[in-house]
Image (tube, rainbow, N blue to C red; front, side):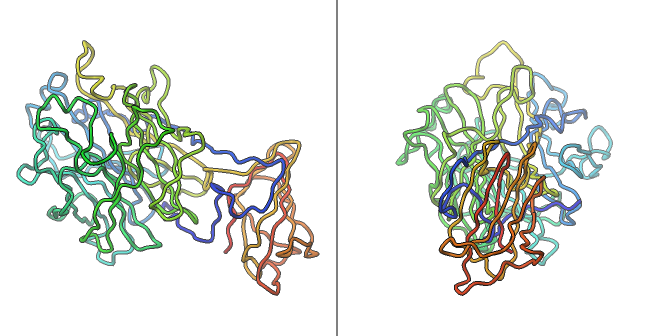
Length: 478
């Protein structure tokens, strides 16, 4: 099975908006949520303590498996022997061939209790992507990490805040990294980030929170609601881009809270990436007054101006009492990975309450966290649907003439999708309608057995589509 995080296709029409639809009756637009698997990687090794918190999940360079980098933070009151042995934080590597079942390979790089037979990776833990565009195999993986210039590995935020800055590095195997390179101008930013690549603009995309997060140098202020100087109250998402992974634009706020958001909501970060003809983003939301974290699906035409989800509904959310994602159920800052007709969306699951709600308690000290995974059909974010009463839609004139086209669609029960060819002024073209039943992510539209859509004088064709107990997820012009 091949894995890929390349999703950009300017010829694929998604239905977050209705620009391609001329008219429709009896058809509704529905937003969908993935199936959540809260804990696909649990701590079961003596160096992991109570945490397998995912940092990055990405395809291996051969495309036949996916890699997961995760961290294990150990509280001295619960794991004193690990802290005393110098393992207050341990970074590890896991592998999977399906995203749901994981193994922990013997990396052999770090000695633990007299043995190197473990999956501990040395040095810093980088937010990592696989970069197939770089011809240098020593640079096939790229990463960024928030570090302190005078102390490696990085100290805890509470211990030292001055001078922290993001650094970039490259790697041949996501284990051994080049010396960290300081990203100038990224000092005193937020403490979480995301990294992806824009195939359209050929730019690396880096998101975090702009400087100004700290209100003062007084330690107690850390536990108050953060106020960003010169910016709207709270934590917001900012974007920087780079053509070469060396020079970066200034951070620019792209997503901030508006009047429809709850007053106590902060945005921790957002992983943004090209998908189809749009840009999509996983917006991680911190519900400050409740101590909870979830993720909202957002979309954009240009990667700068963003539209929020319908009714601000969560895309991935927390679970029920007793579940591994009881308090945190949110997407980590990694793009989705395609595996066949399915998207793998890396998540984190936590049962500890986010500070400052967790400052003083008689319960267990420290933190927990597990790697989770959410799964969704390819293009399955938003659909146009009709129930058993049926509905129909008509597209705007599209550049289909002489091209091949496919639909991502499914029917249930006795459902049906019927596709009719129309001229640009919505007159029948005289071809036999296509009848579709079943479930297919790339069903070809072949009229009268011909793979190409018939040519017209102006190259434009409209489609008339009847749906009954059916859903349409995307239309692709090949």
